[in-house]
Image 1 (tube, one colour):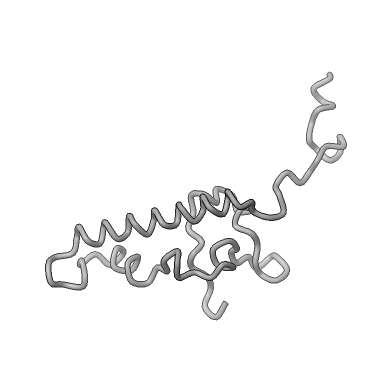
Image 2 (cartoon, one colour; image 1 turned 90 degrees about the vertical axis):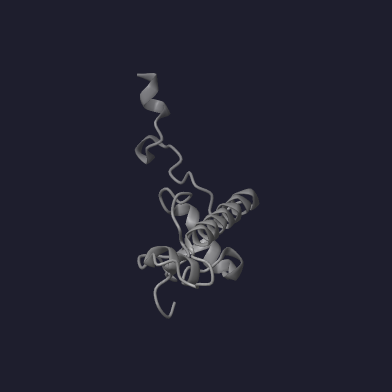
Length: 113
């Protein structure tokens, strides 16, 4: 019976909002490192599959990642740490509010946004 009183539901008086309103500096640093690692892996794939003296690898997805996918250092701060969400006022929400945000890429935004 005592376990029911330790529930986090609002009906039981628990704390509802468990995520911080802003990303911490270590979270931002880890996000930047993950993005840099992705950039490095894309570059390694591109260099390993590219024939000598040619620009394209012949693989559309790898070429798109290499040439169309923005690099970490090319992104603006707002694009690194926020993502588009049509349900939020201002159409932006912090990346850490997205489920599984450490496993997803948020570098592409809608056109003209």
